[in-house]
Length: 200
Image (cartoon, rainbow, N blue to C red; front, side, top):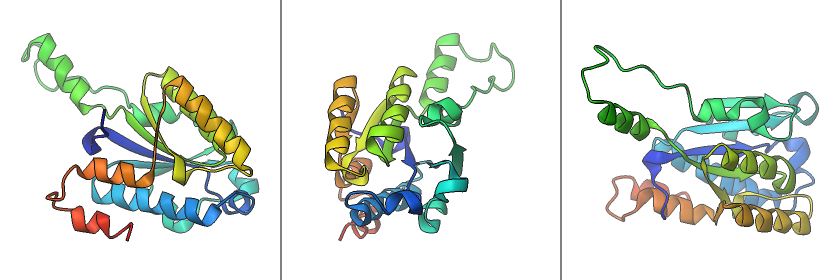
C-alpha cells in the first residue's frame, strides 16, 4: 500500500527547543520534519503540530509552527487524549439540499472520499508522546505512517524499542523520502522539481 497525498494528513509531535536539546540526532530530525511540512504545504496535505507542556518546554520552532494549520498544546502524552482525533476527523457535515437527492450508498461514498485517514506522524520523543499518540490513532481506526528519520528520543535504545512496538501494532515505518516520493507518485507531477529540491 502506497501513501496518497489526497488521503494524507501530517502531524508533527513536540519538536520544542528545550526538548530537542537532549534528543539524539536532533539537527537531522528537525531538518526532516521541516522537509515533510514544506512538501505537505506544496501538495495541499493538511499539517498539524503538537506541543507538550509549552509553558515549560517552549513552542515548536517558528519555521515548523508557521507551516502548521493548527498547533495543539497538551499536557497528556498522547495528543489523542487532548482532542487530536477530532481535528483529523472533523464531524461530518449533513448533505446540502434535499437529503433524498442522492441514494444513501452514494452519500456514504462521498463522505468516505472526504476523509483523510492516512496520518503521517513524526516527532519526539518517539517512545513517549509519539508512541502513545500513534497507538491511540490506530485504535481510532486511522492508518498511521511513522517517519523514522524525523523521529527520535534521548537514546537510540528507546527510539528503536518504540519503532519495534509501533510496527507490531500495525503502523507503517517509512522515511522522509519515501513519504515525499509516494505523495508525488511520478516525475511528471507538476510539483516534482519543487519537492525534489527539498531533499537535494
